[in-house]
Image (tube, rainbow, N blue to C red):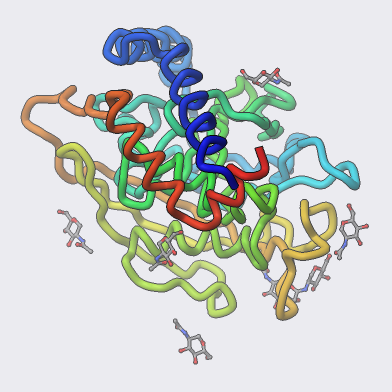
Amino acid sequence: MLPSTLTLYLISLLQATYAIDLTPLDAHESLKGAHRRDHSPSLQRRASRNVPPDGFYNPYISGGKLLTLMETYPPNQGEPLNAVISGNSDERVLVDQEVEGGLRNYFLSLGFSGNCLGQKADSFQAANLGDGNGDKNETSIMRWNYGDAQLGSCKETIQGGNHFRYWIQDGKDANSGAIFMATSYEKPIADHHDIIPDGYNLGRDWLVGNITRSEIKGPNITDGMTFSGNTSWSGYTYNTFIKYVGGILPNTSDGVNHNYSVPVDGINASDGWLAVLEVKIVEAPSKPNSAINIAVPPPWQLLSFLVALAAFPSSLQVLSML
Ligand SMILES: *[C@@H]1O[C@H](CO)[C@@H](O)[C@H](O)[C@H]1NC(C)=O
Ligand SMILES: *[C@@H]1O[C@H](CO)[C@@H](O)[C@H](O)[C@H]1NC(C)=O
Ligand SMILES: *[C@@H]1O[C@H](CO)[C@@H](O)[C@H](O)[C@H]1NC(C)=O
Ligand SMILES: *[C@@H]1O[C@H](CO)[C@@H](O)[C@H](O)[C@H]1NC(C)=O
Ligand SMILES: *[C@@H]1O[C@H](CO)[C@@H](O)[C@H](O)[C@H]1NC(C)=O
Ligand SMILES: *[C@@H]1O[C@H](CO)[C@@H](O)[C@H](O)[C@H]1NC(C)=O
Ligand SMILES: *[C@@H]1O[C@H](CO)[C@@H](O)[C@H](O)[C@H]1NC(C)=O
């Protein structure tokens, strides 16, 4: 690996980033604008939400399923939608925004950020939640940020880690407002973002473990087992009540992506436990709307971050592949 190659790569990454976000602040402002526009229809839909006691509609009842649709080899493999934020959660948490304690602020409280520097995802998955919307593109993808809300998801992209895609069950046939998440722990980009052994079940249990701050052991789970914990971000504290439910998510390796390597120790790639998260806001800042603090960092900060990142052997491996 020649140092000049590395420098060239870093410069091209900087250029790519700042060509999209010419002036970081303006770019962020316009992103916020886009967000609001995107979500006005869902605000209207929220009004007609009809939430069953379980907090969501079982997608299998009306033609949906809890495996995503994606391009795979061999074809027709999907990834388990193994966690769901109940439609009985606080209304504010069910709105896909970072301000006012919304869903993205909740995700930040769990240690997950949006894609590295707001870049568009390089791959997409769809899901049919049985709500009348048919196969629908993911709403977004969130990545474990290693404690750095601004740049940590860049590290996740290169080194791997926990991440999830999510979809909102808001079609006219089953408008619960629940948010379905496909969590998994992926390997570094150098390993083509494959999933680690048991990585779907572990991704879910580590997410829950981060909320409860205690280890959740998949094989020890029993039907109806509950946990709870509090997490905070930007002045909002969320209380999450978690219930593991069996009988809805398939307990199988059949049709699950990477099923030649993910099932281990006799545990299926999808172990069949659906984690249902009911989220309440137990503390909010006295002045709402103070949650905007994730902006695109200044170029110098990014450059030093990338140089630091390049110090990791695994990212060097990636850079040398370019
Ligand atoms: C999913 O969304 C991405 C990005 O907006 C887009 O490129 C892609 O075509 C969409 N796929 C479908 C099936 O709508
Ligand atoms: C929290 O998440 C990280 C990253 O996914 C994981 O390594 C860790 O085991 C989790 N903690 C708990 C207690 O589950
Ligand atoms: C899981 O169950 C095993 C066997 O019963 C037990 O030894 C272990 O302590 C349990 N682990 C947790 C985290 O509850
Ligand atoms: C979470 O917050 C609630 C409300 O403030 C409190 O009653 C509860 O004890 C907290 N739970 C934990 C695990 O800290
Ligand atoms: C794995 O999935 C199959 C169905 O594909 C099921 O029959 C079997 O009981 C499951 N095994 C375990 C250990 O969960
Ligand atoms: C993986 O899924 C396919 C169905 O898509 C199935 O035919 C195959 O047996 C599965 N492999 C394993 C190891 O479970
Ligand atoms: C999955 O199947 C295994 C083997 O039959 C069983 O022990 C386990 O409890 C099942 N899991 C769920 C969530 O039903």
